[in-house]
Amino acid sequence: MPAKTRPSLTILQALRTEQGGWQSLAECKGMDPDLFFPTPGKGYHNPLEVQLAKQVCAQCPVSKPCLDYALAIGEMWRGIWGGTTPQERRRIRKSRRTGTTCA
Image (tube, rainbow, N blue to C red; front, top):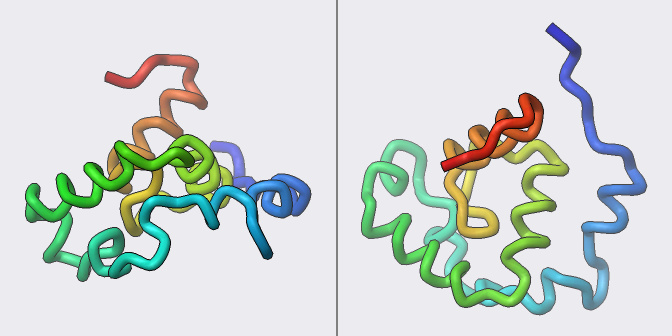
């Protein structure tokens, strides 16, 4: 099994924002982070909480860059990023590695 690779610093610098950039345009900016990062064992088992976060992401003009950022930094275990749960991001990452499509 190949070693886990980290994204290059160049990729992270391109995705990260210091002033401006995609994060400044995010629909969730200024919202309660608990909506997107629920307490472990609590929020992800509550479909309503996940649905509320996903509704915000669905209206966000930068949900694709947000998801790309989460995938680039390897964020597979916490939070709603780009309208996806950790489980969904793990599936996306796996499908990209194997060349299959996600449902």
